[in-house]
Image (cartoon, rainbow, N blue to C red; front, side, top):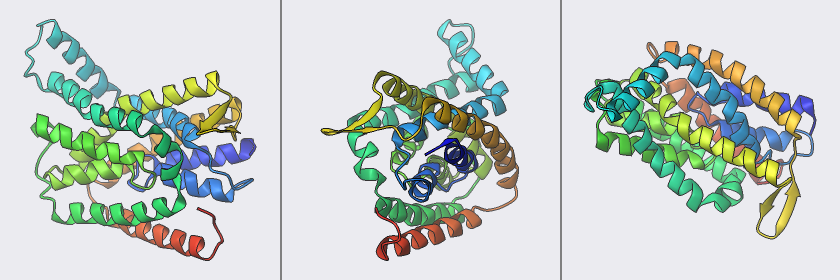
Length: 284
């Protein structure tokens, strides 16, 4: 794998991270076609997500600084703990707990077994249908201000499903939000804000592992990283720039349109992947 392949995967990460089509699935599939056909790996995926989450911080900078300020001020008693922004800070913390716990418990499976292309194909289709059902039957009445503790927990549990490639972090959390009656923009906005602690935590942890250990360890087998540090950094930069543009597009798009195109795309991609795997064109 070289700088060009890293750049291509960075572009794919930026294009797919915020759309409900699973960036990890696309990186896994694209990796099978590039260079040696190897899996780019969970570490590369997590680190490049640092770029796209930086785009989230820039895009939602005013919201984020307001939430953080209100949260700290509520701890000091300068604003009531019932303040909407202070509560949002607690909701994001609470919603992050499930993915942290499950990510640590199933780390080995996430980095090995769950990256099978068969699993990716199935989850693309199944959770595409889930998104379609949520968009069709959800009442789309609630706003972010109507978030409660139980709903924050449900959002968090939905986000933890994104540990499985093919599910999609935004797809799972947006689906949960729609099923709970939130409108599309509210579900997407909270989905992006909720992802920040989890993605940065995962990316920095994987970065630490890569720096500390020059290879990935899976059981007793040690395999060298596919990309060098400079290639991964370049991919992360591209992912961030492209990701910012995709956020701007996506937030405008969902204010007027349904998720139907993404549902259809997920199903077609999953079926195509199943055909390629069944015919031996791709190995799982």
